[in-house]
Every structure is written in structure tokens, then in C-alpha cells.
Amino acid sequence: MNMINTLSNRVILTLIFNLFIFQGGLCFEACTDDEEFDEDNLNEISLWPEERTLPYVEGEHYLVEGEPAKFECKLPELPAGVLVHVTYTPDYVNDVRSVKVARRNLTGDLIHIKEPNGCTITVLTANLTESAIPSGLQSRCGDTRSMKYMGPEASMTTEISDEKRKYHMGYSIDNARNTVNFHFPNGFLNQTGTYECRILRNCDPGVLKEAEESEQHPVAITKSLFLKVYPRPEYKKDLIFACGGLGIGAVALTITALISRGGANFD
Image (tube, rainbow, N blue to C red; front, side, top):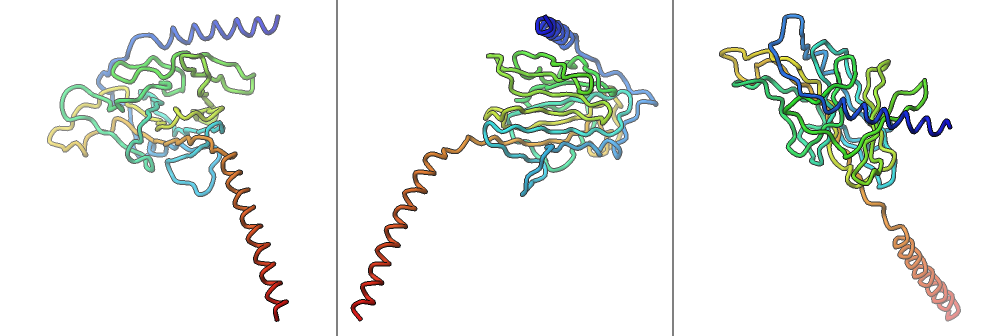
């Protein structure tokens, strides 16, 4: 009975989650004086693998197919009026080793730059609750999603699956530590790509007249992490080659010993 109740609760949560995600988009209204976007503070955002193996390259992480991994996006104190946009793209993006700052475009309405081949893992408000995906941003990743309750001391985990309902990755929110956690239970080759945490200004600060684009108001802060998943090596072939080499080496060593012994006898 407990198992049936658990499955029922999970189905209900999944339906609620899907209905919530498909709510309408958000509009960018003019910013007010109290909607700050402190660039220096927000630049403290970080995105790291939980376990770093040497040699470690900033902004990059490598797995062998089937290996698990966990990433942690550590967020600074967030002001009101921002969104946290977590994304994936199969491409390698520029400047994965540094925090990137996007500034207000010079003409027209505020446009947040997006990766053309990317998708949205989640969108969060400043207090790290799930939000609708604003119009103009990438559609959500995966074919199906479900929410998994891991117990009173753990965060709710959202599982993202493919069209065959195969669990590919998940994410969870830790409000106490102000983090978004990426879960990869098994490394898949199609998980190779760039994962990004972006802090978006959810209002339009307007254009500074007679100022270059590099001098405009900041509207987005991004930290990226590139994940490369390699195919699992063929250990059987390597073992046969190693054993073959070992056998040849042993024969050569025996012949050398016999020749050496014979030479000694000739003397």
C-alpha cells in the first residue's frame, strides 16, 4: 500500500509540475529604483563539479561513459527582480573559464542572448522557487519530467528523461546553501555539452544614452561548465594486446638468456 501511495504521489507531483512549467511567459517591464543588479556581488556565482580530479581544468569536466557526476551551482545573494536560468547546449561555448557579463542591447526591447541549440533545465525566482519559462528563452530539456521525494532531510529532485523514459539527469535546489545541484547518475555520451547557470535581470533597465554597449547596464551574469563524456574503452582488446606483448617479451628474454649462457660455454 505504501508503494502504491508513493507512486500516486509521484504521478500527481509530475502532473502539477508539468502544468506549472507550461504557464505563460513573462514580460520585461521597466526596472524600478529598488531592483538592483550589483555586478560585483553577482560575479561571485560559481559552477563546479562536486569531485574534482587532477589535472583539473577550470570550466571543464571529463567522464567515462557510465560514471556518475554531480555539479554544484553556487549562487550569491540574489536581489529581487532576477531569475536564475539553468541551461544545457551540446556545443562548447566561449569563455567557460570565466564569469561572463551580458549588457543591455542598444536598441529595441531587452533581449537575453541564448544559445541557438540550447534548452532550459529550469528557471528559478530569486528565492529559488520554480518559475514559468519566459517567452524568448529556450524550451525545456527532455521529453518527460518527474519529481522525486528523497526524504525530509533531502531536497526534492526533478528527474529529466528522454523519449524512452530513460533517466538521464536531474537537478535539486538547496535553499540553505543557495545552490542548484546537477545530478548525473550515469554518464551518457549525449550529455556532452555545456551547462550554464545564468542570473537574468527580469526587468528592463533601459538604454544609457550616448554610451557604448560595453558601458550599458548589466542584464545577465553567466557561469559555464563543459562536460565531456568519453566512450568506455575496450579493455578486452587492450588486455589481449598487453598479454600478447608480454608473451613476446618473455620469449625474447628466454632466447637472450640461452644465447648468453651459450656464449659463456663457448669460452
